[in-house]
Image (cartoon, rainbow, N blue to C red; front, side, top):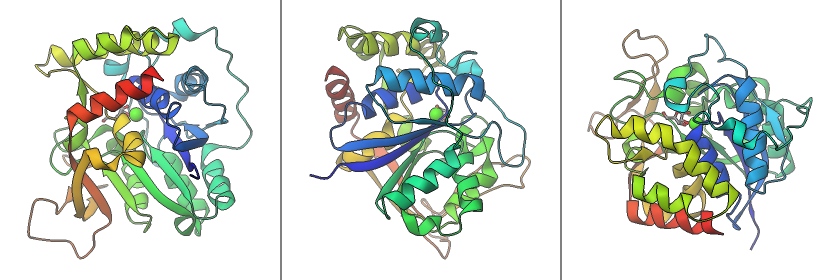
Length: 311
Ligand code: RIB
Ligand code: CA
């Protein structure tokens, strides 16, 4: 069976790291490249973090430097969840893994190059701000015809997490997100509606930590501080946001949702970065531009996460 070619764009980040480790164990896909974009933390961390975690995951694909800031506005970070190093304060535990000089090719050009090379079969998984995709779309007008599907962690049909209205990845670069949603590329959207149901409890995190490999010990360590962040706020565990789109590429059966219209607010003060959706209303847009995921079989999500990480 042909492997699915996947370009993974991320802002590594604690949940990005878990998604990379899972990606490295999925026989059904081939990671053809990774983009490290600024988001959870600055690119001075997301680039080395992505390089080192990809190596830990056994992924040999090149890591390309993505955008150092959003297309039209200053960067907003999420160190309060991911710590200043982006890996829960544990980046030093993998600092023995060498970080190569970044390729001259930047992530947005790499996305285009891989899309051309794979002649319309390339899948992009984007789990950080959509800046690299926004720049690629601005630079290459034929790109939408060359990408099979984009699976994103971003947005929500109902609530926000960085503001009451907006989810972080969209909020950081709403203009880039708007370009993506208006591009015509098929979009599979894992927003907060589903990713906040895809959590790992302390017991499940301990089970991962006890698998006994360097990668699993590392990810359990990395997730510990943000797990505390969620528990103290009354949640049952840590939201593994970015694993959702990654798992969905191969296991759509554990997720559910429907086609809906999504429009991104780029002008609002209170609603900036809102993915306005007609998912829950009969007052419909005249377009349906995303498959909006709202539910997951959490048991199967945990089972698959453990199965891949045990490989
Ligand atoms: O809102 C959650 C998203 O923002 C996740 O992708 C997390 O890693 C951060 O990028
Ligand atoms: Ca992320």
